[in-house]
Image 1 (cartoon, rainbow over the protein chains, first blue to last red):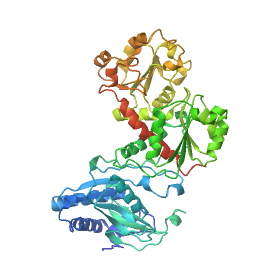
Image 2: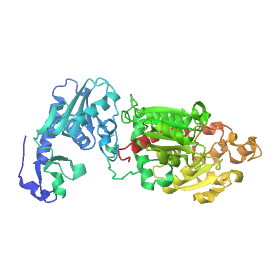
Image 3: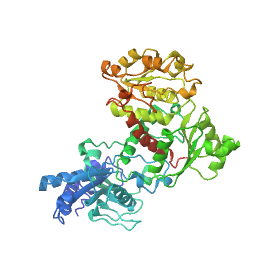
Image 4: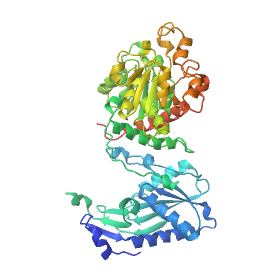
Length: 201
Length: 320
């Protein structure tokens, strides 16, 4: 994986960000990774139409859309794409003060006998993926579920691992990993923010 | 489909513990509930229409007055969200033995209840309960005072026809005085910027009608010509001793205030709603209730979704 830690292109950007954040992946790195995902997803499939991509709210949705577009451009295939919000299945409600906002879930196709690939930005404790699997089971019985993430930052609390990984990034619990997508954040990049709490003080 | 997706993040702080009435909710609160309810509506169309979100919550439905639709709708919403539900109705309980409301609720609450849905004939009972117990209280109708979840589901259904209710003309027609639906609807609709006219015979207008802030009309023709949405209310015959104290006869009421097929032809634009149950041939012709301009059945479906959203939003950890 390409790690452009001190590339000159990010220096302008970095002024806008907290002082202690470091760019881990640039837009070019990400576009190469998206293309790799597109190839990897199709590789083991005789019948690619069985594949269905599901992006998890919020950044995973944009990642998923990007990959669907790439697959269409490169291979001329139109894959089914859905959007999943796992709020209803989360296990951390009671520890938070406010009920988390519910977002759109839209899976406009039958999951029966499909090979589903779940897409999210960061894999951390594994709890979100657990919720997502519960949610998918309520929609039907897919043949298989695989998981794709841009950054695997370690610190798993559940026995879960990703099938497709953008980059593995050893992190400290106090650090924060932030995947940016240009639709929401005006740029494609991955940042690591050291001790976000200290920065606020 | 992906182009239509909206992924906006509202930062609205929904800071309520109870839902006693729409008086306490701001315009932004109401819009937030209606916005969130859209995503709960989707659960109802899933192959497994059930989520485990409230599985650690126990909810008691305290119905001191008869109700079919509201009670069913609440119960379904609770079960769809995975909550444990206990039902209580006046007829089959110790209320018959003379237990007071306060004692009843204290007893129920000592069984570790998280939320109480209450329907009572006396206005203010939900407010009273908030001082007795720690649980979140949801008003399912207190006399002719407020019935906030009904108003929310009505507004939700209206928004499916007109996404922005600001400046829309809404008419509420019929037995204004006895309806528990009117007050919450008027409060909510005015907060969302709609114009509201209450239309009905003078005998069915409550004394406080002008305090609500809505226009009052006694002319059905004028009202139907003006409105975008006409919501007819049920004539509550059970609240009149002989059935016809407030108007000479049901037939005369229908002639003056019933919506007929002729009205549908004459005024081709308005949409028809009714909180149910419909007295066919009184508030409206049977054919009107079943016409394609009637959205009465969507109201019922949406009721479950809106109540799910309310249960969810009030179940938060922010409770003291």
